[in-house]
Length: 185
Image 1 (cartoon, rainbow, N blue to C red):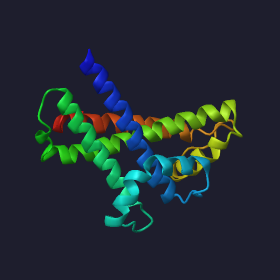
Image 2: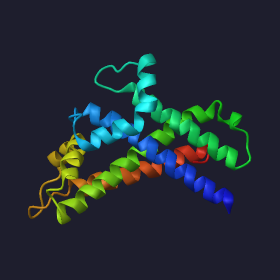
Image 3: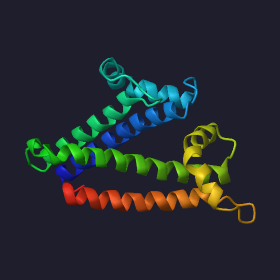
């Protein structure tokens, strides 16, 4: 029972932290204003890791590499702690664990897309003028706009978020199966 509780807490905390790192990189890639309250919160949560990494890994091409490497390091920590809780040596992470950590980060990113799409759809019905709505629309626009070219409005209803949600779910299935073959995600 304690093992399950430990695994749940490790999964929860490191997934949320990894998601915050990914959101930070994503918000900078789409050029969200840093003064946005959600952006400031992401910076406060992740600065302790990203700022030291930036001294070693500079951003390039509009990509915040320090945040992405931080997410990968969080995924490595996640896998190491899962192994420790299972009573196995974290040395098993080498070499397949390094690749598996990339799959974990990819899984976090796709899950993030799924949850943000769901939240955006719910907010569009409940409170379309919520301050969070602009944040979500700015982040998801690069993914939704190409879909909107192919998916017409049906009775004034935009079905592109539903398509994105379905594609994200399919992506999660593929990632989980790939990771299961390598390491057992």
